[in-house]
Image (cartoon, rainbow, N blue to C red; front, side, top):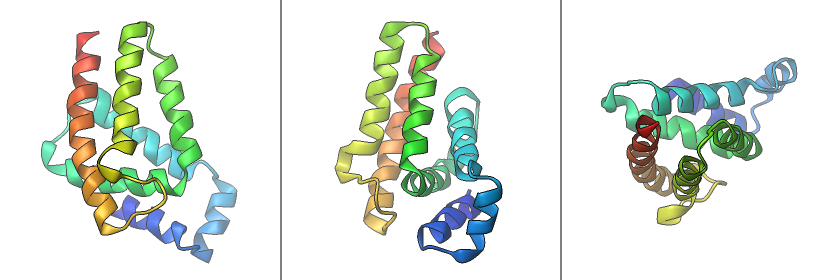
Length: 132
C-alpha cells in the first residue's frame, strides 16, 4: 500500500519517468484504485492495513479524481437496489467531503482527515453490502 501511495505522489510531483509508463498504460492508477476499493468493500481484509490503504486511496484519488468519480458511478450503477445505491452514494460523498478533506492535496492534515473518513466509510459501506 505504501508503495502505491508513494508512486501516486511521485506522479503528482510531475515525475518524468512515469510519463512513459502511463503513456503505455494510462489506466495504471485507476486499476490500483479499483482493486483497492474492491478489496476493502467486498472482501475480508486485515483491519491493521486500513490506514495504509487510506493513504494509498487518497494519493490515487488526488492523482486521478476523474477516474475516482467514474469508478464510484460504475459501482453505484451495479447496485440493483435503489435504497442501497443511495446509502452507498452518501457514504462515498462523505468519504471525500467530511472533516475538511480536499481532493487536491496529500498533505499530512488531509491524509489524517481522509483516514478518519475512510474508517467510517468502510463501516458504512460494508454494512450496506452485507445487507444485500
